Image 1 (cartoon, helix red, strand yellow):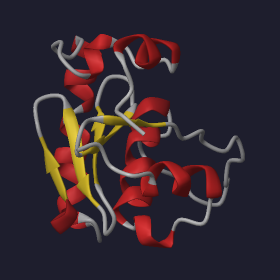
Image 2 (cartoon, rainbow, N blue to C red):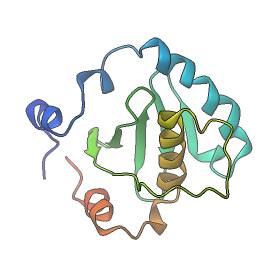
Image 3 (cartoon, rainbow, N blue to C red):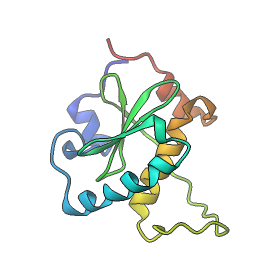
Image 4 (cartoon, rainbow, N blue to C red):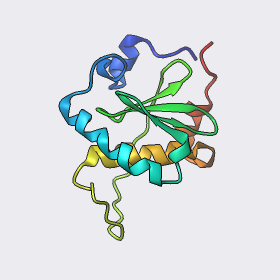
Length: 134
C-alpha cells in the first residue's frame, strides 16, 4: 500500500506540523522530559531525540513520535501509524508527569514501539507489517 496522501493524512488527523513545522512552545518544553528520563531506561539505546520527534528504533521498524501531537510516523516513508491508547488507568503507579497527558502518551508509545516485536494488537501489527513503500 502506498504512503498516505496529504488528504488521507489530514483525514487521519495528522496535521502538517507533524512533518514540517516548528514545535509550539508547549511541546518545546515537553521535549526536555524525555531528554532527562529516557537515558536511564531500558529503551535508552533505542531512542534519539530530534528537534520535533522522539525517534524510537524497534525490531521491526523505526518510529518517529511527534513531540507536539504524539502522532507516529513509521520509516521508511513517514507512514502514519494509527494507535489508540487504552482509557484504563493503573492507580498503583504514580508518574511525576501524570498531569501532562501528552507526555505520558509519548513515553508510553516509545516503550511500546521499542519492543514492537512483542505487540499483540492485530490492528497495530497489520500497520507495522504492511508492505513498506518503495
